[in-house]
Length: 287
Ligand code: HPA
Image 1 (cartoon, protein in one colour):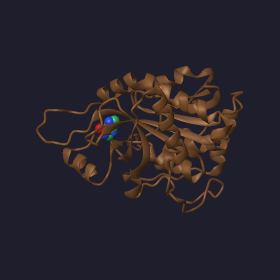
Image 2 (cartoon, rainbow, N blue to C red; image 1 turned 45 degrees about the vertical axis):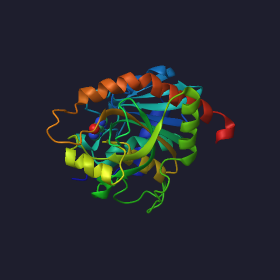
Image 3 (cartoon, rainbow, N blue to C red; image 1 turned 180 degrees about the vertical axis):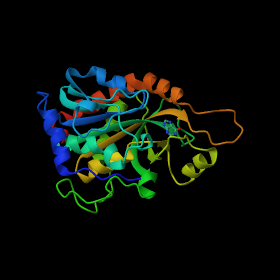
């Protein structure tokens, strides 16, 4: 079921509400995936806004997602972080899942960093790897649940937006440069976005591998699509929290606990990488 998309006024009401409650004027948005909420703890002079206070914001329900905006300074840049995101599998429409992204755009945010926990599909990936997202396959969108479904709001972008280079080539290259400086062997690949909440069957994992997916998860692609529609620059980073299971009778199971645990263990490295990227974004030469 697809509920009615939001109106421009609803996005504006939410943005106005946020603007009145913080002195910061965020330029970079951060979306923190499963087990990665701790990243927001490095944000200085932070203002916290619980999602349930903000007009028209959906409320997050999944364990491991705190459900608030953290607005403050990170690596000297004003940022707005989502501590917890909305997922299609929770029952939200795609318009609700991506509501905060358009609000961020209205707040003046020009660059969006999306993080997620993902299952490794590429056999050369190891648990704990960080993957810069080069492109995505949005299975939800391909199945008709595109976040831009419904009347187009021209104030955000065009009716038929291009999806070439959803993930900014400049930011992907920057991610590489910063990772190299830090001795982080960052991977690259295609993110497959499935609706969840089930993890994949072994046959689905083999199918995903065959069609060119490197890592699989239940988020990110809708947010990236809406951000790109609005002309924001997007950087996506997956943390490989588990190896997707591709054979029957293996006695192995993927669990949400495993995903959260690995996510937490990876936070310091992911944080370092994001801080490094932010520091570079803050330098006038990169923009
Ligand atoms: N599949 C789907 N989503 C995920 C996975 C996975 O293996 N790991 C973390 N999120």
